[in-house]
Image 1 (cartoon, helix red, strand yellow):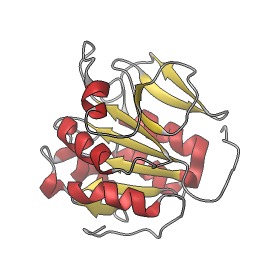
Image 2 (image 1 turned 60 degrees about the vertical axis):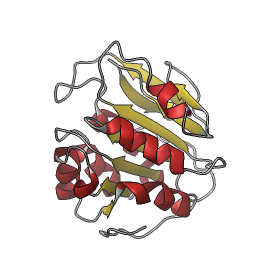
Image 3 (image 1 turned 90 degrees about the horizontal axis):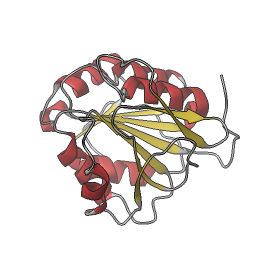
Length: 204
């Protein structure tokens, strides 16, 4: 297992998974993050190969820079979007990598693959967020993040456009913070740079 070098104590990356209904959820979150949010926010959404507008649609509502990930790109502050038809992975020296390995749960990119890679590299320094979606992708990966000591956040299924994904994640990680969509950004902003106890609540 590769490990990123340890810097200051606290979280070092936020990984976010979404599927059906994810555009509204992602725009809500990035719009709510402060412009000085220093943690990289890495997003994977199930989308068609020809889908090219996600970065532009997120940039419209965010003061943070929004970029699509390229292979071997260095990780830094801002919002990073995994490209369609590639698995997104983390390398221990602070870079992204992309993979064309087989789809997982019929999906490439796979949320589980990204979450598991983040847990392997960053351990307890990861915040994982599962949003709306129509399958169970992300549940296994969020469990691995929590087992590594990271912080798990799940969109309250009652606020999700499609409830299957957040319900599966909440079942797999019963200690996760279960929050209404509109409160997730404030929660992330409040806990950046420090560790919080595990929780299962519907408040920021």
